Image 1 (tube, rainbow, N blue to C red):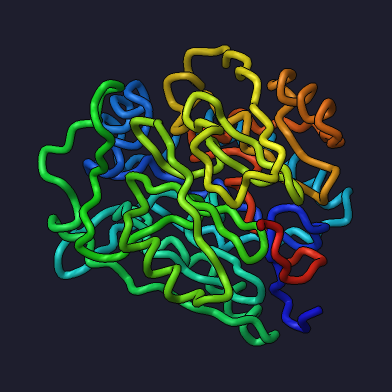
Image 2: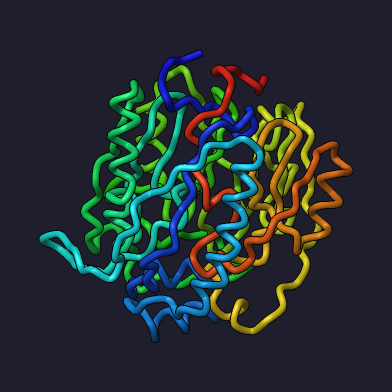
Amino acid sequence: MTSSPVNSHNEWDPLEEVIVGRLEGATIPSSHPVVTCNIPPWAARFQRLAAGMRYPRMMVERAQEELDGFIALLESLGVTVRRPEAIDHRRRFGTPDWSSRGFCNTCPRDSLLVIGDEIIETPMAWPCRSFETHSYRPLLKEYFQGGARWTSAPRPQLTDELFVPGFRTPKADEAMRYILTDFEPVFDAADFVRAGRDLFVTRSNVTNAMGIEWLRRHLGPGFRIHEIESSCRTPMHIDTSFLVLAPGKALINPEYVNPARLPAVLDSWDILVAPEPEPIGGNLLKLTSLCGKWLSLNVLMIDEKRVIADRHHTGMLRALEKWGFEPIPCDLLHYAPFGGSYHCATLDIRRRGTLQSYCE
């Protein structure tokens, strides 16, 4: 067992410490093609009109109530909860090439990747998220002083060369294409999930091939990175398409992932096919959610058996029970306009376990 305060190798070892995001200061993301191409069309229209403004108080208060309940649940399960600083995301920032307002720090899973005792700040493709990890700096310094490794991937320039001009989302019968070029490495941590020495990734509109290759070289020969092929036309983040839940068990979204086309290292694994999600009621939530309907997959493992899942998605709760897990229902539906659910809203800092190989 490492003496570092940071120690997390997979998605299922017993969870001891976690960072949970914040809603304070949340700002509707600034307009940019890489933002609007990634979110549902109805939310994109809302985003263009209100970009750079604060989220309406009503939306924040409802999500905050659910977030407080989620944090209380984690603490009741013996998990230490840490938080980033609350900051004003409306403040404008920039580089010599561009300027933007911020977004929010609701989803630490996106900007920080934990591999063992190392925390990696990721090179994010949304300009409005370029300095998001600054709100986590007090925690990162504390973990570093305690013995953790702290790395930052090369900060991207985010100039026009990174983005395909006039990009149009491919239709279902067209070949897949992405808004990102390989001008420089970019990736979100949430496009990766971890199973010890094996990581799984989806290439997306925020993670390019050069970003995947940067992480592969950085981690070295002790790790393998496998690409999960997704048929989603607007891919962003693997944890609504594919998630590893326990040794030998992976959960897939059947609309986006074909089990026959999974990497060969998963041939001996049980592939659990998620049930169709329950429809979301309420026009406001449907219009403002930054996520698709498959947010039902966005669960958080407390250990190999216990899993926090959304109370609304009863089909998923029943399926988890059938597969031998112990689901713990919770409420976080109103977090979707801010970027995610249980997996997105958290970053595993310490899980009680060691580095192992779970794939043949």
